[in-house]
Image 1 (tube, helix red, strand yellow):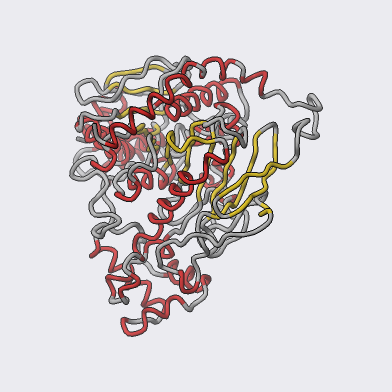
Image 2: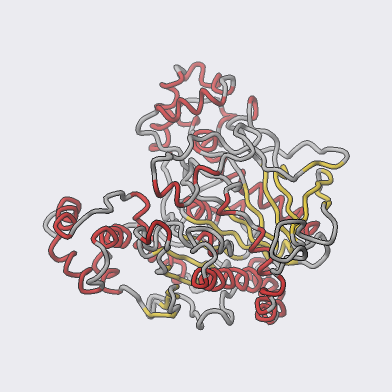
Length: 541
């Protein structure tokens, strides 16, 4: 028996007892969520201690207690990445003496803020990520745990969305308190280097050998955060042998990438990719062109490229923003990422890791603003995007749903032709290995926010996976929204604990296989369908 197989069996065995308790844990949720004092008003959240202390290998950290959840924020898992550490592999943080205050958020990787004119950005509160400041002391993570004890709870590690360029684990949609309390699990969110700070392929433009990993620093950061979890999470009541990684959008691409990263092998035991199925990443040739554009903005050349460590992070951010056509993402070809994540097949590095893969019904609506689109306008859009095929595409989609707005039909078409097609390919390739299972879900429940015009838009299932039922995205605490959060969060908890998402809150969810294509469809009438939207799948295949 291989080490990976033994590890997987130990993971499943360790969760076999835990899964029997999931039903009882969730059934008691309503009582557990009642505030200790005072009922129906503002005030202290607990009758117990205000602060919590945990031990890490670098020193003690102090968090705060809220309704029996211990919250620790901005725990360093790496050293600052500015100056001579810029574009270098992550280094361990310097140990400290005494008690480190970990109550407030830490810095996030430099990035431009979300456009306040965008209703979608407002919907997902993307402008609320810059809490804790911005800079190059970003290798921090946040932990929520029901107890600093020896309970050995399953651990859920979230990698945030925002592509490879924006976002942070500090954002409100990644707050782990409700999920930790809902499922008696430990939740971790991670900040790491983004855009040019994490993925400038300087080796492709003649930089000295010490810059060899500049194009994959952000991936190395994520691996370092998982190493921290392995080495420290037991001190926060977590089980390093039951770690689930997950992410949506860019976080899904990060999770896809970690599944193919040799140095991440064995650091996690389950994974979920939400609307971010990355089959391929950047080649060295593509990345070198982006690095050239960046250096041109900075006035640097091959002879003085190392001076890029001396400029301010503000100037570097300005340069990457002005470098039109540049794309900063992980670079395939070196020892860190020797091949694409899921092309031409699923990665063997994670052959024994079960995976959940998903999309939302109108995922592509995040980039669409033509809300007043009419049927004639929809035909024109399809004709321009898919010349000669507009009539057949429109007929196909109107047969399936004659009542959806033209705006949402447009979003469905773009999703089926793009992100959903990639998700299905990812599921097919994972299932084809015949080892650990893949599970597929389709989120169809439309957000009621903004009068429902966005439908089941990109990112709609993030709040549900964190059991954040209070968000406007999830219905602001409505009965229907809470039920949807219960369904997805319970699947997350079960999967983290056992490697199988099945539980009493959802119908039996079989693994995904090319022959049946069993898919959990999450809506008011949550159900399992074989090959949902099969006509569309076949058309775009």
